[in-house]
Length: 228
Ligand code: HEM
Ligand code: HEM
Image 1: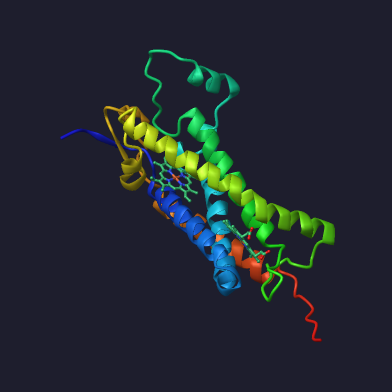
Image 2: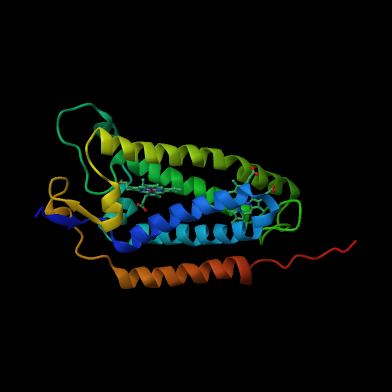
């Protein structure tokens, strides 16, 4: 049997598939207009929680989840992009993939944060709607309506890169994102992480749920209601 090594911890894998599903569902519900806007906003809160989780996990999670491990320096990126015959495969994200990961997280953060400040011009408003100046609100609305196109482009590129690895480089990256493990043909035993830090992952997840609850329920300003 081929030897396999644990590279992606379980909390990171749950984050990834949860994040992908949440974004797709937020997109779908946004397209349905006012009918599903309440569900859309709840999915947006879930996205915020997942982003908070990923940011913390990028600091205290296992090796390959850490930003310090995969955010490339310019020289590392140039060396990676320079054509050469040596094997440049990396155990975690490669330098180019890492930039894509950061870009996706930044775009989705902008989308979710701007959502907090806008309304749908019908009945529904984000929890911080009305708490900033009109000009800033227009900026938030502009961002929420336009950043999504860049997000779609980034997601398409993300899936295209994974397909390129599968078809051209003959490396299946999707299976490791499900099982966590890569074969010895692609990674060294010394690259493996000893375990997934599941208990720490649960503690971080609970903190993120509490943070989002505080952000969108406890701390959100109460809007004055106007009756005409
Ligand atoms: C990552 C999470 C999110 C994604 C991917 C997302 C995506 C979208 C998209 C694509 C639209 C349609 C924009 C258009 O018609 O051009 C939309 C509309 C909207 N979103 Fe989000 N959104 C997210 C988070 C949020 C959050 C957290 C809130 C508020 C709590 C929110 C509130 C709204 C509202 C109120 C609209 C309707 C805006 C209008 O009709 O002008 N969204 N969202
Ligand atoms: C809305 C859709 C998606 C979003 C927003 C998304 C986002 C992300 C993010 C943020 C990461 C970095 C993981 C981390 O370090 O936390 C990642 C990695 C990854 N994603 Fe996705 N993803 C999406 C859809 C998909 C789909 C459909 C697939 C499978 C075909 C996929 C396969 C992967 C793989 C294999 C990796 C690891 C890449 C590597 O080895 O460097 N993703 N994705």
